[in-house]
Image (spheres, rainbow, N blue to C red):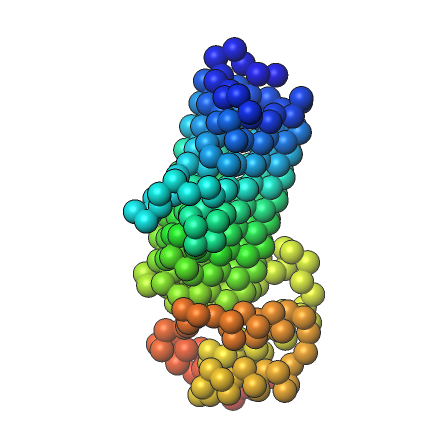
Length: 275
């Protein structure tokens, strides 16, 4: 299953049923799992581990040295999980001594020209559309969707089930369950369609909507909003939202003042109209 034009350095560990296509170059510290296919012209370098049943398209680079001027060839890793689809020209760099590893979970769909920088942590079931870009140390939680040409600033986090629109610049953390868009990003409510597709119940979505309104469309401070949510609302997803915001070091993206005012005005009008 190894094409004769592929170059495999001594020491590489490749599963018997892995498929290494034409002109691939595999370094001596690479591990490739069962059923994984490298289609052609794929470069895998460094201490890189690729799990099972992945499909890696032409001209992908995995485990290359980080684009960090402080990096001096320390032993760091790149770890890619199982059942990932990685499309053309994607780059995933290995970590630096800061964390030691760049990690990608399972069941992700990473589209053409996307970049995952050093020390990033990408969860599972994530979609990165064409040219989505992660700066160093970014964290993307499970089931997040990053649209085309979006850019996540270094050290920023995107929470579970969040949706980031195309051409969006993310300078702060994006809480779970929400939609973010714009340059610089602002929030546009819950990712309701995404939550419905993932099996969230109407009751769970309604509770998250209440939490969102308290956080972003009330006159309360952030701390007071979190306390109010903890007092009035229950459920694991609400706890996740509160925990994410409390743990944020960069601060979180918010709604624009104009959008918040419009939403508040619309809500007041609806309450005043007859049923």
